[in-house]
Amino acid sequence: MRMLNTSFLQCLILTAALFTSPFEIGAAQSATGSDQPNNSSWPREKYSNGTRLIIYQPQVDDWKNFQDLSWRMAISLTPKGGKTVLGVVEMKGNTNIDNVAKLVVISNPQVTGTYFPSLDNATKEKMDQLFKTFVPSTFSISLHNLIASTPKKEAPAGVQLNNDPPKIFVGYRPSILLSVNGEPVLSVVPNTNLQFVVNTQWPLFFDESGSTYYLAVGQQWLTAKKLDGQWSATKQLPPEMSKVPQDKEWSALKKFIPPTANTKDVTPDVFYSDKPAEIILFDGQPVYAQIPDTQLEYATNTNSTNQRSSFTI
Image (cartoon, rainbow, N blue to C red; front, top):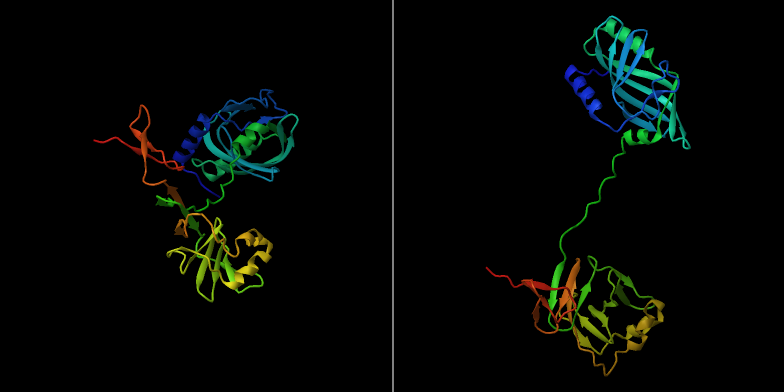
């Protein structure tokens, strides 16, 4: 059985008296008729045969499956003609919820523990029995206040997030960001000796025989030996590429295989990243204009949100 020292008990009583969100305890049939289910004031007094009981705001320990309730409360007990004793009582009971009246009826309340740190065992036993004379066979409490006083379950463990800022690429001519989610993952193109990179949104193929990558951009094809290498336009594709559009996943590439002979598309620069990244594209060198009534300027020749401060010390 747990023991509470006097200073802790006094702190518990003071804390319970200061809290205002109640766990309401009221006898359904009180001998004094003074308990009301909607009474939210604390502490509360009860009298029986000259004995005075003060109950401080109870604290819910658990409400298992909304059926089995356990709680504790600080009390002050003054026997008829005796001295006041401070203690803590633990109780449990079965609950039945009345959703219409918004009440919870607690039946079969049982005292599971009493703690009177200042008393010897014999006197403690007498106080234990004296308190039990105040326990009714059933009582009702406010559903809303009971819920408010019930301990909340621990929140689930958080997810470890990577909040590192993305890498920023800056281009001053037509450019693309070839983004791959981590290391390239290759999968075989059906009925060919080619592979494609699964973890990118681009149509990106790999010819193992020539150790060469092929990338479809607009109406043209780019090629490179390494993803982070130098990309250049090509009119020559591996013979196996003619089979690629037979797969419905790549059917849209049919009109670009073989490559268009007289395409007027400008060959873009390729920025490669296997981590989150962003690209800022300018039409030539940045051109800035003043934002009225501020010390800021904005870039006029980009679709990216780009500003700089013109404030100098």
